[in-house]
Image 1 (cartoon, rainbow, N blue to C red):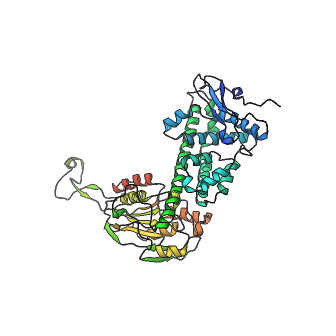
Image 2: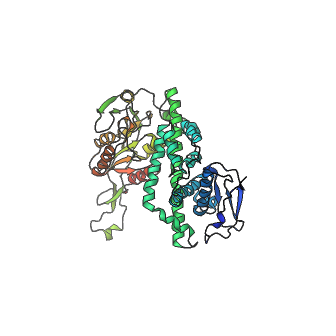
Image 3: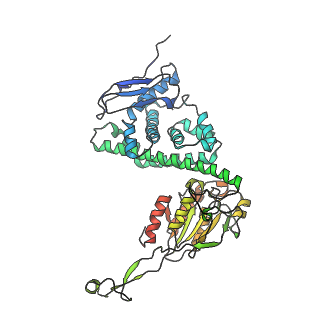
Length: 463
């Protein structure tokens, strides 16, 4: 019987930051690529690895992948994960994505060929309740290999598959922006600029994995909630801890629905729903106090000397108002608390939410563009958002009809637009970009950024 082959990572070049070249085998009998592990450390205790001991092409491929991991994984990954406040799965995914690229460059081969069983991953994606950030990070760690493509194309959960593809495209854009050559600095002197750039590269990639894993998981949770809501006839997911009837979702059948767009240029038919605006939604967007030469009580006494117009009084400027259009599609992963936070931050504005179901009959019944707030009043309940896009530009055009000169038009969206039947074409993407450029639309990609900018606008400050 031939002697089992063992991986020998000690032959790899020494990193200036690494103190020893000693590698200790952690476990053998490794039979899949994701089980191949190499932990590089800056401590004297040495490094550990898990690699197969069996003969065969697939096992040789896994051993070669182990040597690449030893060369391109961050040392002391747990320390970086703690410093960056990220889960280890995201840092591991970043290291593996780099290693996938480097393996292909060095060996001209796909590391996942005959080394990854994709069926358990596909099975997990088919059941949204099984999807977790760690699972998504594991799937993303195969990016750049055929295993990633097989998992995404093999799942019946097409919405999650589209999400994963979109994050793959985001990674490609990010890759082009930062250039992979930066990772070479990982082997430079510990205090060099090149090494700092390499660590920043890994940090940014780990953060991208973190955002992707959380977003995809939130979308899966939304699918689970949607299934429950369809059974019970409720609307959007209630916020955690919601106690009052005022935060309960709207009933299924909406009143006051009319068609405003018959469907053309790739977009779905648009149906506007105008629910009763029963509660106050007053705000002061754009209002601020300015100096004036008229008033009842003087405030700026120093202006008697400094201001030739003697503007010692103050007055409030007229509020801007403005229009805020919120993309409530599945890719935004919003729950009720997110939508209500956005509506609250938009106080005083006209607020429009949109999400199409892909079924004209359902949209004609419930609406897919919803006028939630107008003239200082807002709807008591939120409508049901089925999770599609479909009417991005028609919703923006509807919002434009309420926009006055000088008022902002704000679009809260990740700009992942889709049209009729949830199809995305280059034409509708171009239409959306042209609309944004032509009408100076302020685009805010997520809740955190939107709330921050909307608060600035409330204070009369520029974006």
